Image (cartoon, rainbow, N blue to C red; front, side):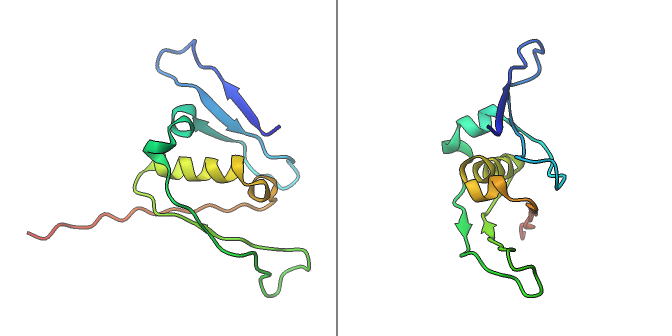
Length: 112
């Protein structure tokens, strides 16, 4: 099982944490921690995630397959929700050996 719920009840400033533990440490994938309230409130934090079909990149090994997942985020809570959604609910992502994640926030300047 790749999920661990940590009860931080001893610390009044902490909240429950849900931890993703990679299936293997062979490829140095990090253990990731997510605030439980973000996972438990998808109506507040969920974002539509677009998935590409699997593709075989040029100059890669015969068994290497890539799948891109993209969603529009405007805050760290959206990022944490999307990442946890993929790791916990998409078996291919959860078992992948070389997951890469990136995000960027744009702040539009208002015209006066």
